[in-house]
Picture 1 (cartoon, rainbow, N blue to C red):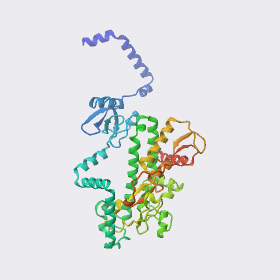
Picture 2: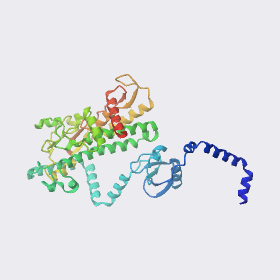
Picture 3: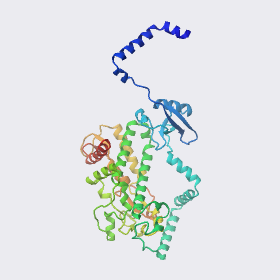
Picture 4: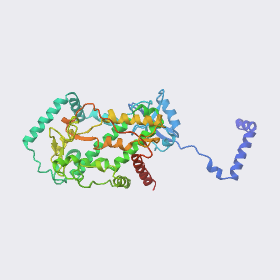
Length: 444
C-alpha cells in the first residue's frame, strides 16, 4: 500500500499522460483499432540435426524462437530449418504463416539438413534386414560392376532359353493377372496405372535430388538474392512437372504418342492420350502446357502397345541403338517387372557434374552481374533458362532408357545448354505465362 501511495505522489505526470491518452481514445475510438496487439504465443518444437534432443518452446516471433533455441543449443551462428524439407526459415512473415507444433532443426549456416523423411529412412534402413540386404546389393554393384553386368547378362540368356510365358503380357486389369500385382503393386487396379506411377517416382527422384543439391550449395546458403532465384526455379520446375504429370506416360503403353526410336520396331506415332490429373489446378496447368505445346515433343511413351521396351544404347554408342539388343516387357510377368528396376534413365548431359553446376553458375552471374546482356537480344538478363534446364533434368530430351550393362559410368564431355535470358526471350515469356496462370487460378 505504501509503495502504491509513493508511486501516486511521485508520478503525477504519468497520471496526467495516461489521462490524456484515455481522453484522446475516448474522442476517437478508431484509434483503438490502430493499436497493434502483441502476437499470440504459439508452441513449437526444436531439435538438432541428429535428433539427439527435442524441446518444446513458446514463441510469438522468429526472433524470440531464435533466442530461446540459442539457450537450448548454444551454437556460434544458429539458424533454424524446417524438419519437413530442410528449408531455412529466416523471414518473420513466413514464420508467422507456420502452424503451431512445427518442428524446426537447429544447425549452423552451412549444415546439410537431415529432413524427417531422410532421418526415418535411415532409422528404417538400420533396423530392416531387407534394406540391409539392399545396401549389400548396391555395394556389390559399385565394387564389382563388370561382374554384376556379366551375371545379369547370363541370367537373361538363361531366361530366354527357358522361354518364359509371355501370353499374359496383353492383360491389363488386376483381376486378369493377379500375381503381377503382388508386393508394392497391390494397390493398383491396372498395369498401366502401376507403370505410370513408376515413371513418376523416377522423375520425382530427380526433383528431390536437384532440390537437395541446389539448397545445400554455399551460394544458396549465403546469398539471399541467389536463394530467392533458386527457390523460384524449383517452384517453376514443380509446376512444369505438374503440367506433364511428372512424365507418367514414359512407361505407360496406352499413351499413343510413342518415342521416335520405336519407329525402328514398326510403331506409328499418334496423338497423345495420356490421362490428366484430377485436381483443378493441375488440370489448368496441364491445359496450358498442352495448349502451348511446351512439352509435347517429350511427352511420349518408351514402349510399344504390348509393353516392349528397347535399350537405347550406351552413351558411347551416340544414338538410339543398342548393339547388344537388350529388350524387356515388364507388363508380361512379375519377374520381368522386378528386372525392369535395373533399367536406368541415363542423363546424357550429367545431372550433378554438369547441369546443376551450370545452373548455379548462371544464378551467380545473374546476382553479381545484373547488367549483363542477353546473347540473342542484347538486352539486360532477368532470369535463367528454366525450361531448358527442366528438359535436361527431367525429360527424354536428355534421358535415355538403358539396360544396366549399357549404363556407362564415365565422365561425359557434353555441356548444358542452359543460359541467361532477357524479357524478350520466348522461353522466358512461356514460363512466366505459366506461373501467371497458376497464380490467377489460386487467387480466383
